[in-house]
Amino acid sequence: MTRARSSRRSFLKSSTLAAAATALRNAPLLAQATTHTDARIEVLPSEPLGTISPEIYSHFIEHLGGVIYDGVWVGENSKIANVNGIRKDFIDTMKAVKAPVLRWPGGCFADSYDWRDGIGPRAKRAARTAFWGQQDNNAYGLHEFMQTCRAIGCKPYLAANLRTQPARDFYQQIEYCNAPAGDIASNSAAPAAPNALAAMRAANGDREPFNVDLWGVGNESWGCGGTMTPEEYAAEFRRYTAWTPSYSKTPPRFVAVGPNGDDIDWTSRLFKALFANPERRHLWGLSIHYYTSGSPKAFAAGDALKFDDAEFYDLLTRGSLMDKVIVDAWNAATGAVPNERANGRSAGFGVKLVVDEWGAWYGKGTELAPEYNLSQQSTMRDALLTGITFDIFHRHADKVGVAAVAQSINCIHSLMLAQGDKFCVTPTYHVFRMYLPHQGAQAIRADFMAPSINNPLGDTPSQVGGNSYIGQLPPVRTLAGLSGSASLSNNGKTLNLTVVNPHLTDAMTTEISVRGASVSSAKGTVLAEKDVHVHNDFANPKAVEPRTASTMQPGGGRLIHTFPPASVTALEIALA
Ligand code: AHR
Image 1: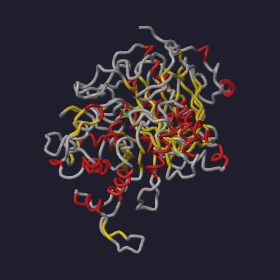
Image 2: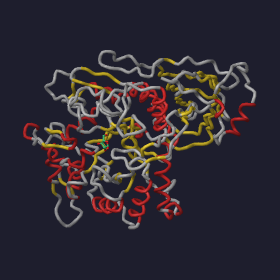
Image 3: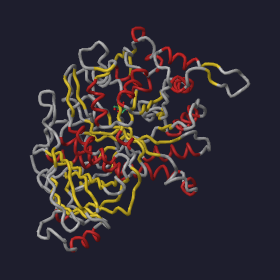
Image 4: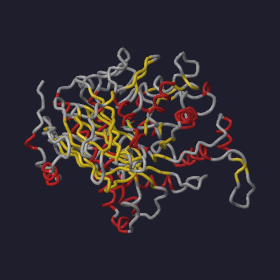
């Protein structure tokens, strides 16, 4: 096992921030002048990046392995603590991270799912063979999902079946979900009458409409969702959304299937095709799926627990490509429709990016049991990837409207593991909690100046991403030595600063300054373990837990803080 060494000589060499950093390096420290520093962070409150949508902290569950059955749904008669059949620990954990949105039923599962199979008396529901080659007894359907959302206090995000059901089923599902019970005025000469689908919903236990506003129009239509070309998909998107019933003054938010990772060609062609016709009803978002494989050589490979230092740095380097994926998708979409940009429609063209599947995806070996397909363990390495990913989303607060981790429980990049009466949270869960102050805050620019780290596996090209990968990205040879994001809350008086130090051995003593403001006090939380392989499991559920960060007294309006090796830190800094 070789330790990857940070290349201090490469510090700032390739950085566009080099000039600013040199100026800062020469600036006198007003206090703590004798403290040695390895890095600097300069926060610029006068440069807002956008409001951080709380919905980038969203979640995703699909009938796959042990996600729904056992993970979320244990049944009303279970000895496992539950609320109307839903695992109580799942609800409590989702509440603890203030989950804003929950996506269901897929994923690939969505494009072979008939929503009518999951309604009505549970004992009478048909069992079906479903995607992922598994049997679905349909005990968990639309009403159970809505109950889950209500128990958590989050919004539902449904994915329509575009591959195997006609457009009629999509608009009737909207009708079933959203039509009010009782007489509906006909908006014609016909008399008011109750809506039959709303009456069916009421008979199935929910008189009140579900008011679902976020709808994925298909899933991965370039792959499991129909192996379509972008032009074919654009035509389907238009057909499925050309008319849908509406019961609210707020239009529905339709999300079009976007690229497989960094597939710029898909995005560019899709937008050309979609905007070739002025009718794009309620196109609100473009979905992006970007997974970081556990191995640079193959998709969904590598071991979640056994990795060496080189593999550790390489995974975080490829995970950091999320930044490129976002920028490339944005540029491809806006570049494909230059007139929209010229028309000045919002920052770009009024469409938000919806990164509704992300995470580190490993090969087999750490699943809870063979039937828990795609379940995997999760270490400190995954916690660092979580921090890096959220910091990227914050830095693109103007572009990313929604993001959902794949998937919340017993799956790829999970916050929770559950098997029967056994339950634990993963290190990723802790990062979700630590990053809560960013939700809804104003993202601002922060420049991080630290020596970059050589990626020892940097000569291996990365996969484009997604489930069925099609192509490669150029090799990436360096990983940011310190990265993070900043936001303001509490009327600009509180600075939320989150920082990932990926060095396996080096602590980073860092000078933090805020342009135009003074640091008056700081407190924080840190997630750091000496061994990055450490993880929680049923036998040892608290092996990884955050602790209070020891912060120094600010001096001269600045803060000196030491970020331990391989750590995620969340600082709350009071500004004067
Ligand atoms: O999250 C697992 C699968 O990954 C999803 O079903 C699919 O959309 C993606 O390829």
